[in-house]
Structures are given as C-alpha cells and as structure tokens.
Amino acid sequence: MCAIRDGIAPRAGLVAVRGWAAPAVGAVSWAATVAVGARGGGLLTLVDAMLLLGVLVVVPAAVPLHPAARSGTAAIALAAGAFVAPALLVERGALATVLAVPWLLATATGALVAIWSWWSHHRRLRAVVWPAAAVYLAVGAAWLVMDRADLEPPASRRPSFS
Image (cartoon, rainbow, N blue to C red; front, side, top):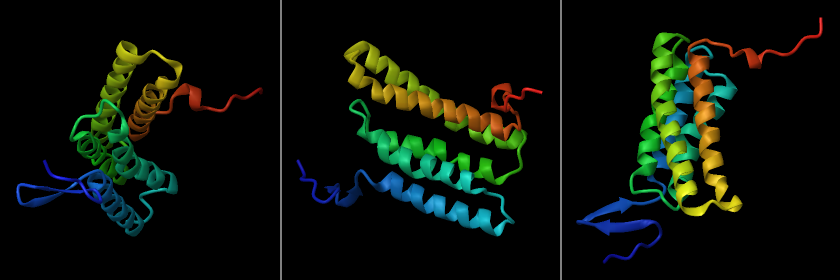
C-alpha cells in the first residue's frame, strides 16, 4: 500500500496525480478556449466564459466529493464538458446543438444517479443537497442545448401588460 502525500501517490513507478488533475486540465482548456474566443472577434461572451469555467473546472473539482463517486468520475465530467467549448465557439445551430448534447447526457445521468442514491440510502433532508445540485446542473445543460439550438423557451420572455 502506498502512502498519499500532498495529493500525489506513486503507482507502478509513475506519479499519479489525484484530485486536482481533471480541474487542472479543465483550467488549461478553459484558458485556451477563452483566448481563442477573444481572438475570434468576440465569439464568447462573459456569460459563456463563466459557464465554461463551471463546466470545465468547478464541476470536475466538485463531482469527486460526492460520497458515491467512483474513480474517474471527474475525468468523465471533464470529457463531457469538453464538448461545451466548441459548442460555444461555433454559430448557433445543428452543430452547436450536437456538441452540447454530451454535457446534457452526462448531467442528466449524474442527476438520476444522485437521486437514486439519495432515495435508496438517505432520504434525509440534509442529504438532498447533492441530488438538488445535480438536477440544477442538468437543467442548466438543457438550457445550454436550447441556447445552442437557437430556441427561446416561452417562459424566458418577460411578461408584458400591454
């Protein structure tokens, strides 16, 4: 058994970085995407950049904190989130929509797993935080897919009294 010190564990003669590898890769990917978006004549808005920061850095950092998270969960989240960057860099339409779908599938699956885990094991109010967060991510992913498809849900329009 090898000891883990400072987030680094020796494995088979190589150094395996644990915990922060996926968010670190996500941070580099985020910075590169923002740089490309900035040079491309404003392809990314500030909102797009902040959304991408959450998808590529925050989610891969937070997902492994779930008690039921398996090894590689952060890498799966990062892999699905990696499709969001090109989805935000291309014009809205079919290609952008297709690129956003893996993130929707990953977050919807994560939400179902979190709900199932809560329902079958905990069912305490304080344990509902993870399922609620997972559902919030899935709803955001659905909105991203609709945005990339250039759809405007009726509920997003401001009500008028005229």
